Length: 400
View 1 (cartoon, rainbow, N blue to C red):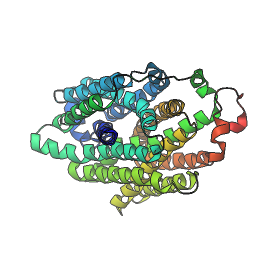
View 2 (view 1 turned 30 degrees about the horizontal axis):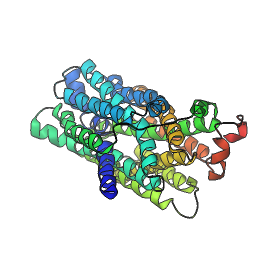
View 3 (view 1 turned 60 degrees about the vertical axis):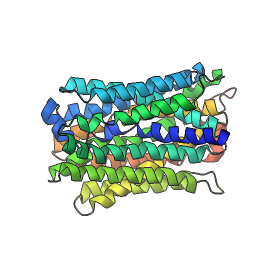
View 4 (view 1 turned 135 degrees about the vertical axis):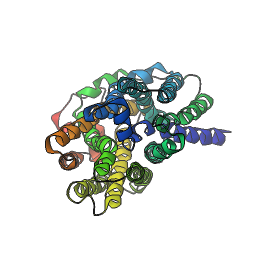
Protein backbone atom coordinates (compact mmCIF):
# COMPACT_ATOMS: atom_id res chain seq x y z
CA UNK A 1 0.00 0.00 0.00
CA UNK A 2 2.82 2.34 0.91
CA UNK A 3 4.49 1.68 -2.44
CA UNK A 4 1.28 2.61 -4.20
CA UNK A 5 1.02 5.84 -2.22
CA UNK A 6 4.61 6.67 -3.09
CA UNK A 7 3.86 6.05 -6.76
CA UNK A 8 0.88 8.41 -6.60
CA UNK A 9 3.00 10.97 -4.78
CA UNK A 10 5.62 10.81 -7.54
CA UNK A 11 2.82 11.32 -10.07
CA UNK A 12 1.72 14.37 -8.09
CA UNK A 13 5.31 15.68 -8.10
CA UNK A 14 5.44 15.35 -11.88
CA UNK A 15 2.07 16.94 -12.66
CA UNK A 16 2.37 19.73 -10.10
CA UNK A 17 5.83 20.64 -11.41
CA UNK A 18 4.59 20.67 -15.02
CA UNK A 19 2.22 23.51 -14.05
CA UNK A 20 4.90 25.91 -12.86
CA UNK A 21 6.39 27.28 -16.12
CA UNK A 22 4.06 27.08 -19.19
CA UNK A 23 2.41 30.43 -18.36
CA UNK A 24 5.82 32.14 -18.63
CA UNK A 25 7.42 30.04 -21.37
CA UNK A 26 4.51 30.65 -23.78
CA UNK A 27 5.06 34.43 -23.69
CA UNK A 28 8.14 34.59 -25.91
CA UNK A 29 6.77 32.74 -28.96
CA UNK A 30 3.50 34.69 -28.77
CA UNK A 31 5.09 38.05 -27.93
CA UNK A 32 4.34 39.69 -31.28
CA UNK A 33 0.67 38.62 -31.26
CA UNK A 34 0.25 39.68 -27.62
CA UNK A 35 1.86 43.07 -28.17
CA UNK A 36 -0.21 43.73 -31.28
CA UNK A 37 -3.50 42.70 -29.63
CA UNK A 38 -3.01 44.37 -26.24
CA UNK A 39 -0.76 47.32 -27.05
CA UNK A 40 1.85 46.25 -24.50
CA UNK A 41 5.26 47.80 -25.14
CA UNK A 42 8.59 46.02 -24.70
CA UNK A 43 8.62 47.11 -21.07
CA UNK A 44 5.02 45.94 -20.63
CA UNK A 45 5.91 42.56 -22.08
CA UNK A 46 8.82 42.35 -19.64
CA UNK A 47 6.31 42.81 -16.80
CA UNK A 48 4.60 39.55 -17.80
CA UNK A 49 7.74 37.83 -16.55
CA UNK A 50 8.81 40.31 -13.88
CA UNK A 51 5.50 40.27 -11.95
CA UNK A 52 5.26 36.49 -11.40
CA UNK A 53 8.99 36.20 -10.70
CA UNK A 54 8.74 38.97 -8.10
CA UNK A 55 5.76 37.22 -6.53
CA UNK A 56 7.73 33.98 -6.44
CA UNK A 57 10.33 35.85 -4.44
CA UNK A 58 7.97 37.63 -2.05
CA UNK A 59 5.82 34.59 -1.29
CA UNK A 60 8.86 32.33 -0.86
CA UNK A 61 9.90 34.47 2.12
CA UNK A 62 6.64 33.37 3.73
CA UNK A 63 7.63 29.72 3.21
CA UNK A 64 8.80 29.15 6.81
CA UNK A 65 5.52 30.55 8.15
CA UNK A 66 3.51 28.42 5.71
CA UNK A 67 5.42 25.32 6.79
CA UNK A 68 4.61 26.04 10.45
CA UNK A 69 0.86 26.05 9.78
CA UNK A 70 0.79 22.30 9.18
CA UNK A 71 -1.85 22.90 6.48
CA UNK A 72 0.34 22.19 3.48
CA UNK A 73 -2.40 20.28 1.66
CA UNK A 74 -4.88 23.14 1.91
CA UNK A 75 -2.30 25.73 0.89
CA UNK A 76 -1.22 23.66 -2.10
CA UNK A 77 -4.83 23.14 -3.21
CA UNK A 78 -5.45 26.90 -2.97
CA UNK A 79 -2.24 27.59 -4.92
CA UNK A 80 -3.15 25.13 -7.68
CA UNK A 81 -6.60 26.70 -7.85
CA UNK A 82 -4.95 30.09 -8.45
CA UNK A 83 -2.87 28.60 -11.27
CA UNK A 84 -5.91 26.95 -12.86
CA UNK A 85 -8.24 29.95 -12.56
CA UNK A 86 -5.60 32.42 -13.75
CA UNK A 87 -4.86 30.21 -16.76
CA UNK A 88 -8.55 29.88 -17.62
CA UNK A 89 -8.93 33.67 -17.40
CA UNK A 90 -6.38 34.01 -20.17
CA UNK A 91 -8.85 32.46 -22.59
CA UNK A 92 -10.85 35.69 -22.51
CA UNK A 93 -8.37 38.51 -21.83
CA UNK A 94 -8.15 41.24 -24.45
CA UNK A 95 -6.19 44.03 -22.72
CA UNK A 96 -2.69 44.45 -21.35
CA UNK A 97 -3.78 45.20 -17.75
CA UNK A 98 -6.02 42.10 -17.70
CA UNK A 99 -3.18 39.92 -18.96
CA UNK A 100 -0.86 41.35 -16.31
CA UNK A 101 -3.50 40.58 -13.67
CA UNK A 102 -3.57 36.92 -14.75
CA UNK A 103 0.24 36.85 -14.53
CA UNK A 104 -0.07 37.98 -10.92
CA UNK A 105 -2.75 35.39 -10.06
CA UNK A 106 -0.84 32.49 -11.62
CA UNK A 107 2.45 33.75 -10.21
CA UNK A 108 0.97 33.81 -6.71
CA UNK A 109 -0.05 30.16 -7.00
CA UNK A 110 3.28 29.09 -8.47
CA UNK A 111 5.11 30.95 -5.70
CA UNK A 112 3.25 29.09 -2.95
CA UNK A 113 3.90 25.70 -4.56
CA UNK A 114 7.62 26.42 -4.93
CA UNK A 115 7.87 27.60 -1.33
CA UNK A 116 6.42 24.35 0.07
CA UNK A 117 7.31 21.51 -2.26
CA UNK A 118 11.05 21.06 -1.50
CA UNK A 119 10.29 20.58 2.22
CA UNK A 120 7.45 18.16 1.42
CA UNK A 121 9.75 16.12 -0.83
CA UNK A 122 12.55 15.95 1.73
CA UNK A 123 10.06 14.97 4.44
CA UNK A 124 8.52 12.23 2.27
CA UNK A 125 11.82 10.87 0.88
CA UNK A 126 14.57 11.74 3.40
CA UNK A 127 17.04 9.24 1.91
CA UNK A 128 16.33 9.93 -1.76
CA UNK A 129 15.43 13.59 -1.78
CA UNK A 130 18.25 14.58 -4.18
CA UNK A 131 16.91 12.25 -6.87
CA UNK A 132 13.30 13.31 -6.27
CA UNK A 133 14.33 16.97 -6.34
CA UNK A 134 15.98 16.23 -9.67
CA UNK A 135 12.69 14.78 -10.93
CA UNK A 136 10.76 17.79 -9.60
CA UNK A 137 13.19 20.26 -11.21
CA UNK A 138 13.18 18.34 -14.48
CA UNK A 139 9.39 18.30 -14.71
CA UNK A 140 9.18 21.97 -13.74
CA UNK A 141 11.49 22.83 -16.63
CA UNK A 142 9.77 20.36 -18.95
CA UNK A 143 6.62 22.40 -18.34
CA UNK A 144 8.51 25.29 -19.90
CA UNK A 145 9.17 23.15 -22.97
CA UNK A 146 5.45 22.36 -23.22
CA UNK A 147 4.55 26.02 -23.00
CA UNK A 148 7.07 27.11 -25.62
CA UNK A 149 6.38 24.33 -28.12
CA UNK A 150 2.63 23.78 -27.78
CA UNK A 151 1.41 27.36 -27.46
CA UNK A 152 2.11 28.32 -31.13
CA UNK A 153 0.57 25.03 -32.29
CA UNK A 154 -2.56 25.61 -30.20
CA UNK A 155 -2.82 29.15 -31.58
CA UNK A 156 -2.70 27.83 -35.14
CA UNK A 157 -5.39 25.24 -34.37
CA UNK A 158 -7.69 27.47 -32.31
CA UNK A 159 -7.12 30.74 -34.15
CA UNK A 160 -6.54 32.98 -31.10
CA UNK A 161 -3.40 33.78 -29.10
CA UNK A 162 -5.43 33.47 -25.87
CA UNK A 163 -5.89 29.75 -26.56
CA UNK A 164 -2.11 29.33 -26.51
CA UNK A 165 -2.26 30.06 -22.78
CA UNK A 166 -5.69 28.89 -21.65
CA UNK A 167 -5.61 25.22 -22.52
CA UNK A 168 -2.86 24.60 -19.97
CA UNK A 169 -5.57 24.86 -17.30
CA UNK A 170 -6.10 21.12 -17.89
CA UNK A 171 -2.75 20.49 -16.18
CA UNK A 172 -3.86 22.60 -13.22
CA UNK A 173 -7.05 20.60 -12.77
CA UNK A 174 -5.16 17.30 -12.89
CA UNK A 175 -2.58 18.49 -10.36
CA UNK A 176 -5.32 19.65 -7.99
CA UNK A 177 -6.98 16.23 -8.06
CA UNK A 178 -3.70 14.42 -7.41
CA UNK A 179 -2.72 16.64 -4.47
CA UNK A 180 -6.18 16.25 -2.97
CA UNK A 181 -5.86 12.45 -3.26
CA UNK A 182 -2.25 11.99 -2.10
CA UNK A 183 -1.45 14.49 0.66
CA UNK A 184 -2.94 14.00 4.15
CA UNK A 185 -5.61 16.44 5.30
CA UNK A 186 -3.16 18.10 7.68
CA UNK A 187 0.39 17.66 8.80
CA UNK A 188 1.59 18.34 12.33
CA UNK A 189 4.73 20.45 12.01
CA UNK A 190 7.12 21.70 14.60
CA UNK A 191 9.32 24.39 13.12
CA UNK A 192 11.67 25.91 15.63
CA UNK A 193 12.38 29.50 16.42
CA UNK A 194 15.73 29.03 14.69
CA UNK A 195 13.99 29.76 11.38
CA UNK A 196 13.95 33.44 12.30
CA UNK A 197 17.75 33.43 12.31
CA UNK A 198 18.08 32.44 8.67
CA UNK A 199 18.51 36.03 7.53
CA UNK A 200 21.35 36.54 10.00
CA UNK A 201 23.43 33.93 8.20
CA UNK A 202 25.77 35.13 5.43
CA UNK A 203 25.37 31.74 3.75
CA UNK A 204 21.65 32.42 3.26
CA UNK A 205 22.47 35.61 1.38
CA UNK A 206 25.11 33.85 -0.71
CA UNK A 207 22.59 31.21 -1.75
CA UNK A 208 19.96 33.85 -2.58
CA UNK A 209 22.36 35.83 -4.77
CA UNK A 210 23.69 32.75 -6.59
CA UNK A 211 20.16 31.43 -7.19
CA UNK A 212 19.05 34.84 -8.46
CA UNK A 213 21.95 35.24 -10.87
CA UNK A 214 21.31 31.79 -12.35
CA UNK A 215 17.55 32.15 -12.71
CA UNK A 216 17.88 35.68 -14.10
CA UNK A 217 19.29 34.05 -17.21
CA UNK A 218 16.21 31.85 -17.44
CA UNK A 219 13.76 34.73 -17.11
CA UNK A 220 15.57 36.77 -19.77
CA UNK A 221 15.76 33.89 -22.24
CA UNK A 222 12.10 33.05 -21.75
CA UNK A 223 11.10 36.68 -22.31
CA UNK A 224 13.43 37.74 -25.12
CA UNK A 225 15.07 34.84 -26.97
CA UNK A 226 12.10 34.26 -29.30
CA UNK A 227 11.71 37.99 -30.10
CA UNK A 228 15.51 38.14 -30.65
CA UNK A 229 15.33 35.51 -33.38
CA UNK A 230 12.02 36.82 -34.72
CA UNK A 231 13.82 40.14 -35.35
CA UNK A 232 16.24 38.09 -37.47
CA UNK A 233 13.35 36.71 -39.55
CA UNK A 234 12.43 33.53 -37.69
CA UNK A 235 8.77 32.51 -37.55
CA UNK A 236 6.76 32.26 -34.34
CA UNK A 237 6.77 28.46 -34.51
CA UNK A 238 10.50 28.23 -35.22
CA UNK A 239 11.41 30.58 -32.38
CA UNK A 240 9.11 28.60 -30.10
CA UNK A 241 11.04 25.47 -31.07
CA UNK A 242 14.23 27.15 -29.86
CA UNK A 243 12.67 27.67 -26.44
CA UNK A 244 11.30 24.15 -26.41
CA UNK A 245 14.76 22.70 -27.10
CA UNK A 246 16.21 24.87 -24.37
CA UNK A 247 13.55 23.77 -21.88
CA UNK A 248 13.96 20.11 -22.84
CA UNK A 249 17.71 20.33 -22.24
CA UNK A 250 16.97 22.05 -18.93
CA UNK A 251 14.72 19.21 -17.89
CA UNK A 252 17.20 16.48 -18.83
CA UNK A 253 20.06 18.29 -17.09
CA UNK A 254 17.98 18.97 -13.98
CA UNK A 255 17.18 15.27 -13.75
CA UNK A 256 20.65 13.90 -14.53
CA UNK A 257 23.06 16.30 -12.83
CA UNK A 258 21.93 15.72 -9.21
CA UNK A 259 22.20 11.96 -9.83
CA UNK A 260 25.68 12.29 -11.36
CA UNK A 261 26.74 14.57 -8.51
CA UNK A 262 25.82 11.89 -5.94
CA UNK A 263 29.20 10.16 -6.16
CA UNK A 264 31.58 9.53 -3.31
CA UNK A 265 31.92 13.26 -2.70
CA UNK A 266 29.18 15.59 -1.44
CA UNK A 267 30.92 18.46 -3.20
CA UNK A 268 28.54 19.77 -5.88
CA UNK A 269 30.81 22.61 -6.98
CA UNK A 270 32.49 20.90 -9.96
CA UNK A 271 29.06 20.13 -11.40
CA UNK A 272 27.85 23.67 -10.73
CA UNK A 273 30.91 25.06 -12.50
CA UNK A 274 30.28 22.76 -15.46
CA UNK A 275 26.69 23.99 -15.63
CA UNK A 276 27.80 27.63 -15.41
CA UNK A 277 30.40 27.08 -18.14
CA UNK A 278 27.70 25.70 -20.44
CA UNK A 279 25.53 28.76 -19.76
CA UNK A 280 28.42 31.13 -20.42
CA UNK A 281 29.24 29.46 -23.74
CA UNK A 282 25.63 29.56 -24.88
CA UNK A 283 25.13 33.23 -24.00
CA UNK A 284 28.41 34.05 -25.78
CA UNK A 285 26.99 32.38 -28.87
CA UNK A 286 23.80 34.45 -28.65
CA UNK A 287 25.84 37.64 -28.27
CA UNK A 288 28.57 37.15 -30.87
CA UNK A 289 27.41 34.59 -33.46
CA UNK A 290 23.64 34.07 -33.10
CA UNK A 291 23.09 32.67 -36.58
CA UNK A 292 25.90 30.10 -36.61
CA UNK A 293 24.48 27.40 -34.30
CA UNK A 294 21.37 28.64 -32.48
CA UNK A 295 20.12 25.20 -31.43
CA UNK A 296 23.52 24.34 -29.96
CA UNK A 297 23.50 27.59 -28.00
CA UNK A 298 20.03 27.03 -26.57
CA UNK A 299 20.96 23.45 -25.69
CA UNK A 300 24.03 24.67 -23.78
CA UNK A 301 22.12 27.43 -22.00
CA UNK A 302 19.27 25.07 -21.19
CA UNK A 303 21.53 22.34 -19.82
CA UNK A 304 23.43 24.89 -17.74
CA UNK A 305 20.30 26.53 -16.36
CA UNK A 306 18.63 23.22 -15.51
CA UNK A 307 21.71 21.83 -13.82
CA UNK A 308 22.25 24.94 -11.72
CA UNK A 309 18.59 25.14 -10.72
CA UNK A 310 18.32 21.58 -9.41
CA UNK A 311 21.81 21.47 -7.88
CA UNK A 312 21.30 24.68 -5.93
CA UNK A 313 18.00 23.36 -4.55
CA UNK A 314 19.82 20.20 -3.45
CA UNK A 315 22.70 22.20 -1.94
CA UNK A 316 20.28 24.34 0.08
CA UNK A 317 18.48 21.27 1.41
CA UNK A 318 21.79 19.59 2.31
CA UNK A 319 22.85 22.46 4.57
CA UNK A 320 20.46 21.37 7.36
CA UNK A 321 19.45 17.78 8.26
CA UNK A 322 15.96 18.69 9.54
CA UNK A 323 13.50 18.67 6.58
CA UNK A 324 11.48 21.66 7.78
CA UNK A 325 14.44 23.88 8.56
CA UNK A 326 16.07 22.80 5.28
CA UNK A 327 12.81 23.59 3.49
CA UNK A 328 12.75 26.99 5.12
CA UNK A 329 16.28 27.71 3.89
CA UNK A 330 15.28 26.56 0.40
CA UNK A 331 12.21 28.82 0.49
CA UNK A 332 14.22 31.84 1.60
CA UNK A 333 16.88 31.15 -1.04
CA UNK A 334 14.16 31.06 -3.67
CA UNK A 335 12.60 34.21 -2.23
CA UNK A 336 15.66 36.38 -2.61
CA UNK A 337 16.69 34.57 -5.77
CA UNK A 338 13.43 35.06 -7.63
CA UNK A 339 13.27 38.73 -6.62
CA UNK A 340 16.67 39.17 -8.25
CA UNK A 341 15.65 37.01 -11.21
CA UNK A 342 12.62 39.23 -11.83
CA UNK A 343 14.83 42.16 -12.85
CA UNK A 344 16.90 40.87 -15.83
CA UNK A 345 14.05 40.86 -18.41
CA UNK A 346 13.54 44.55 -17.71
CA UNK A 347 17.30 45.20 -17.75
CA UNK A 348 17.62 43.43 -21.11
CA UNK A 349 14.67 45.47 -22.40
CA UNK A 350 16.36 48.71 -21.37
CA UNK A 351 19.65 47.64 -22.96
CA UNK A 352 17.75 46.74 -26.13
CA UNK A 353 16.15 50.17 -26.15
CA UNK A 354 19.52 51.87 -25.73
CA UNK A 355 21.54 49.77 -28.19
CA UNK A 356 18.91 48.53 -30.63
CA UNK A 357 19.93 44.92 -30.03
CA UNK A 358 19.51 42.14 -27.50
CA UNK A 359 23.23 41.30 -27.74
CA UNK A 360 24.10 43.70 -24.92
CA UNK A 361 21.70 41.84 -22.65
CA UNK A 362 23.32 38.49 -23.40
CA UNK A 363 26.74 39.99 -22.59
CA UNK A 364 25.33 41.29 -19.31
CA UNK A 365 24.31 37.73 -18.46
CA UNK A 366 27.83 36.48 -19.20
CA UNK A 367 29.09 38.82 -16.47
CA UNK A 368 26.38 37.57 -14.10
CA UNK A 369 27.44 33.96 -14.72
CA UNK A 370 31.06 34.81 -13.93
CA UNK A 371 29.96 36.34 -10.61
CA UNK A 372 27.88 33.24 -9.82
CA UNK A 373 30.92 31.04 -10.50
CA UNK A 374 32.96 33.04 -7.98
CA UNK A 375 30.23 32.76 -5.34
CA UNK A 376 29.89 29.02 -5.91
CA UNK A 377 33.48 28.56 -4.75
CA UNK A 378 32.23 29.13 -1.18
CA UNK A 379 29.84 26.14 -1.28
CA UNK A 380 32.25 23.61 0.18
CA UNK A 381 30.18 20.88 1.91
CA UNK A 382 32.55 21.04 4.89
CA UNK A 383 31.14 24.53 5.58
CA UNK A 384 27.46 23.53 5.53
CA UNK A 385 27.08 22.81 9.24
CA UNK A 386 29.24 25.70 10.53
CA UNK A 387 27.43 28.10 8.23
CA UNK A 388 23.95 27.10 9.39
CA UNK A 389 24.22 26.47 13.14
CA UNK A 390 20.91 28.23 13.68
CA UNK A 391 20.19 27.71 17.35
CA UNK A 392 23.18 28.80 19.39
CA UNK A 393 26.20 29.95 17.48
CA UNK A 394 26.78 33.66 16.87
CA UNK A 395 27.15 34.82 13.30
CA UNK A 396 30.71 34.87 12.06
CA UNK A 397 31.88 36.42 8.82
CA UNK A 398 33.76 33.22 8.00
CA UNK A 399 30.40 31.42 7.68
CA UNK A 400 30.07 32.85 4.21
